[in-house]
Image (cartoon, rainbow, N blue to C red):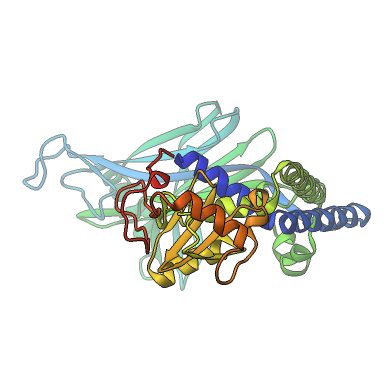
Length: 423
């Protein structure tokens, strides 16, 4: 028997034995699924208000500094450009460039105005009593590529020796004079408008100056949208606080949205239909199977095939015959007595020969009066007929496949009734 035939037989055996139980279970699953789907459809879904932040746009202004080496110095290479240094030397780089870069969304046109200013002011005990502002650069543009850059160059030595020195002389002993760089950005998109401001202190001494950079300012805008969604009971009880603060990603989560209950109902209905269809298929297949007893016997013969050998069961009345009702019982006898089961295809019987006793089994459809359980010697009529047939030579039980056991109490080893045959 091929492996495919064995698999089919095992499947038939499982269906014949457990098919009814499986059908009942599938019908139960189908009933429960349809009932729960009907209840979910009949009951109105629970709803929850959630707020999503949509159409996010971000704006950012960053200020950097750089200074080229234009004077004779042993510290740097000629024409070297220094960027965002913690300190610049007036003897090496008296000119500093303030660079303001503003990043805006690049998927739409944004109106941007950007201004760079330097402010000088005098303070006393942190209170400003004098202020002077000068605009260094001012740009306005309709930005479509997502970036606007404005820059201005300051001669720090000129500021130190000029206006800063004048004010310092006048307020000496009264207050302190300070300088700051201001970058102001105003933007307006199709939905949002606002401003950004970056201020960085500028400290100037006789030999050096410092500007804290890089520095930046950023701002984001979103449009809140509130909507009502259907939620399951578990979500309403456990996740209500999360839903109320949901972001735009909440609409992408499974189980939320206006179709949540509808999807759940469809899932239950689909499960009910699948279970019902599977039950019908099993019922049709089981209805076409042969009788359960025949399938179980065929399966038992397949399971215990290593205990079965092909041969002839002797018909001599010298053997006491015991008819076994179940095939597995015959296998148990063979295992307990350490004998093999002989399959006599001529008589379509299975037997175990143990001394002078033959335990034999026949399929129920092949049983006759001769297969009634016997105890002791067979009836006289049968004995006389067998004695006439055996007068020439008593038969032995022989097995036709190699390596199998055979039992016979007759002293003769050759018998025409025990000739080998092919299966």
